[in-house]
Amino acid sequence: MDMQTSFLDRLFESGLLIDTGIDGLYGRSGQFEDVIAAFERLIDTFGGADGAEAMRFPPGMNRAFFEKSGYMKSFPQLAGTVHSFCGSELDHVSLLQCMEVGEDWTKGQEATDIVLTPAACYPLYPTIAKRGNLPKTGGLFDLQSYCFRHEPSKDPARQQLFRMREYVCMGTELHVTDFRQRWMDRGVEMMKAVGLEVTIDVANDPFFGRAGKMLANNQRDQNLKFELLIPITSAANPTACMSFNYHQDAFGTKWGLNLEDGSVAHTACVGFGLERIALALFHHHGLDVKQWPASVRKALWG
Ligand code: ATP
Ligand code: ZN
Ligand code: MG
Image 1: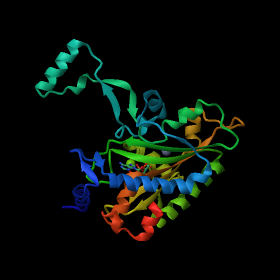
Image 2: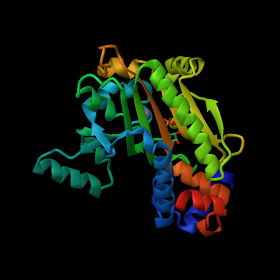
Image 3: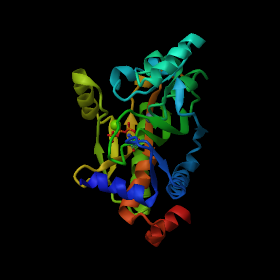
Image 4: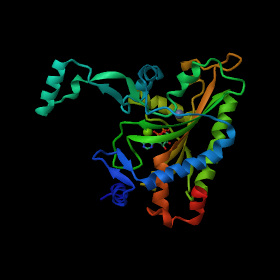
């Protein structure tokens, strides 16, 4: 049995994660949720004085915005769409017949106007663009959403529905790159406070296909993405528990996000993988929270 399977099995046995029969789709115990809630309060204490505007979107987003985002160009393999039955009574009869005999009944499902949110910040850009020019001070937003990615795995740190807490900054290049650096420093400090050793490294997104290789190389060469890594299921391949993304003016141009003087806004976002951070804590300090080091408990629960 490999290490990944055994950590997942231990999480199931302890009840922290609840098996649904699908890899990467888990229930969470009250204890698991309590760790996430405590860590989110820690995020609040680090970010709270910045005056970010909090917004919460549901885990589904407007399909038209999703289409415009270009997600299907870069990550078609990860996307999830919401389909529904939209037929007549007659169609319903054949649907039920189809299910009865175990044939594929999903073919008749039609796309709705909703797709599953792939990253917490996706619904934000069109929302802010609708407001008109950003104020002189730029924009700073605090988001949290369940996100969907079709990447089933036995690695408990790679889930299909997981929560991402994000801060998103809009402004000049200097403004948003300062923001990103500040959160890299804070990320290291926060993880130290909860007893986790981290490294930060340059990274790239898993752009689809052969053309995607070039996009990924370009992203790395330009230092557009960094990750804060913590070993969870493998010491050789530590897991990205935070990411720090600088989009240059790509989202500003795409969505028409402009600064007060009419110039295109640069944007950056910082994401916390909440389940991954909880899993890193359980992996390093044990599955019994009562046994965690006092300093870690104090940082999380005061
Ligand atoms: P990875 O390289 O591990 O696939 P990523 O680069 O795709 O991660 P991002 O797209 O930057 O991750 O997402 C922001 C954060 O969300 C990540 O830093 C990570 O903590 C978390 N995250 C991403 N994918 C998953 C997943 N499948 N399950 C749980 N958390 C995830
Ligand atoms: Zn983002
Ligand atoms: Mg990924």
